[in-house]
Amino acid sequence: MTKKKSPVISFEDFSFQYRAQKKPTLTGINLNIYPGEKVLIAGPSGSGKSTLAGCINGLNPFSNPGESTGKLIVDGVDAMHSSIFELSAHVGTVLQDPDGQFIGLTVGEDIAFALENSCTPQDKMHEITKHAAELVGIENHLDYAPHELSGGQKQRVSLAGVMVDEVKILLFDEPLANLDPAAGKQAIELIDEIQKKTDTTVLIIEHRLEDVLWRNVDRIVLVNEGTILADMTPDELLSTNLLRDNGIREPLYITAMRYAGIDITKEKKPSHVDFVDLDEHDKEKLRNWFFAQPLSYKEPEKETLLEVKNLSFGYNRGQQTLKNVSLSVKKGEMVSIVGRNGAGKSTFSKLVCGFEDPNQGEIFFEGQDLLKENIRSRAKKIGYVMQNPNQMISKTMIYDEVALALQKSGKSEEEIRRKVEDTLKVCGLYPFRNWPISALSFGQKKRVTIASVLVQDPKLIILDEPTAGQDFKHYTEIMEFLRGLNEKGVTVIMITHDMHLMLEYTPRALVFSDGQLIADCRASQVLCDPSLVARAALKETSLFTLANRCEITPPESFVERFIHEDREVRSHGR
Image (cartoon, rainbow, N blue to C red; front, side, top):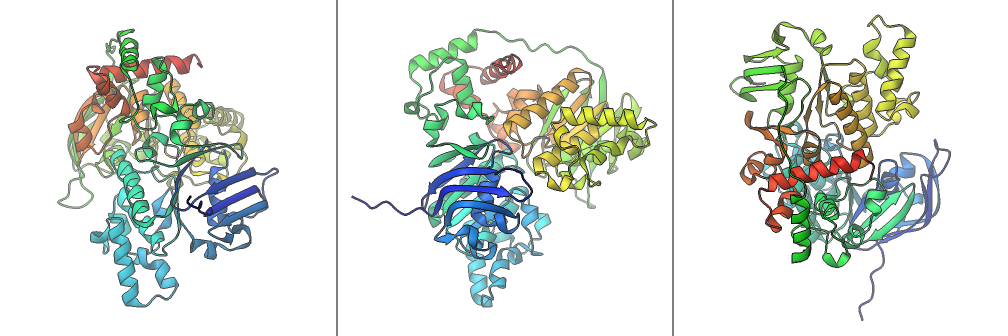
C-alpha cells in the first residue's frame, strides 16, 4: 500500500477579511492540494477565487491588508505569517495581463530578473535562463523587446520568469483572457507540458472552463460567496447543474446534449467532446433534436452604415498592417471581427475612428466621407471601447468618468445625472457609482469604459474584446445589453477572441489574417471550416465536433440550431 503524499497547499477552517470590507471574503475554507496535481479554480466574479489565490501567493495580506483565521500552509510555510518574498520562492504567479509582469528591456533580461536579484553568478544565470526559455519554447526570442511579442509569446515569457526559481507551485490567473483562440489552446497545452516535465503543482483560475478542459485537470474547485461549493473531478462536476446554477458557462457540447434530452452522468466521461461516451441512442436523440425545428437564414435588406474601400495602412514604411480591405456594415447589424493577435483587427478600428490615417482607401459613414472629419466629430457617431480599460480612463471616480463625455453637451446637471445613472444600471455598475476606479477589478473597469461610450448614444459602437475577464453572468449582462441596444438600432462591431460570443451574438463574422479580410460569412460557417480556422488562428467549436460524431450534416446548421435554442432558453429564463 502506497503512502498518500502530504498536501503542498492546505487550508484548515480558513477565513480572510480585507481591512476595507465589512465581512470576510472567504469563510471556512477546507482544501488540500497535493504535489503534482492540476486544479482548476472556478467561480463567478466576486466569488472569492482571486482572494483564495492571493492568500496562496502572499498578495493577501502583504499587499492587500486583511485579517485571517484558521491555517494556511503552502509548501511547508505558514503563509499568513510569512512574506511575499519568501512565498515567491514556492509559488510562481502568471498574471492575467502579461504586460503588467514585464520588468526587463528584453525577453532574456525579464526571465533572468529573479536570478539577478538573488545574485546568481553570470554563467549560471545564462544557463538557467536558457533552460527556462527552452521549456516554454521562447529560446529564439531572448533578444526581443516585450512589445515585439504576440500575446501568446508574452505569456510564455511570464511563465519562464517564474520558473527560474524552480518553484513547486504555479498559479495562473486567467491565462486565456487576452489570447486568440489558437494561442489559448497552445497556452493550455504548454501548461500541461510544463507540468509533466517538472511535476509542478498547477492552479488555474479561469472563466473559460471548456478551453481549460482541452487538457485534463485532476479536480475542479467551485467557489462562490467565499465558500467552496464543490471539489470534484471534471466528469463528476459536469454531470451536475452546479456550474449553471452558479453562473459558470458549461461546455457548449454539454449544453447541446442537455437540450437533446441526454442524461449527463459521470460514467459518460463528459469532460472532453472527443471522449464523451455517446451510444447510438444518444446520437439518435441529438439527430431528432436537430431535425425538430428547421431554420431559415433570410436576412432583411438594410441600408449601409459603414463602407470601407481598398483600405491599406502600415505603421512603418514598407510594412503593411492592412492590405486592400473592402467591406460594408449595414445599419442595425451586429458583427464580429476575428483573427489571430496582430492580424490587423484593432488597426482597422483605429482607422475608422480616426486615430490613424490610411495610406490609401476610402471610408464612408451614412454615405459621407469620414476621412474629412476629425476624431471629435467622428466620436459623436462612433463609440470605441478599447481592449485595455486603463488606456481609456482619465478620472478618479466612476461617476465622473462616465459623465465626462456629457460635460460640454449642453445638458443640465440633472439630465447628466439621470443619463449617467441609467447607463451605470445597465452596465451593472450602479452600486459602485461613488467608488474610486482604482478599487475595481479589470472586468469592472472594462464595464466603466463601455458605460462612458454608451452614455453618448452613438450610432455605431466598436468594442475591442468587450467580455475579456468577465464571468458568464457579467458576460451575459453586457452582451444582452449590447443586443438590446442593437435591437433599438445601434450598430455593433466586436473584435473578439471569444468564439462563443461570435456564435451566440453575431450572425456575421469578418475574418482577418495577415492584414487581409479572408472571409465574410455567417459565424457558424467560420468555426465549421477547418482550413479557415487554421489560417485565422481560431478554434473549431465543440458543436462542430459533436455534429460530426453524430453524422449530422451540414455541421454549421447544427450550430445554428443550438444558437437558436440557447437564445430561446435564455429569453424565457429556463
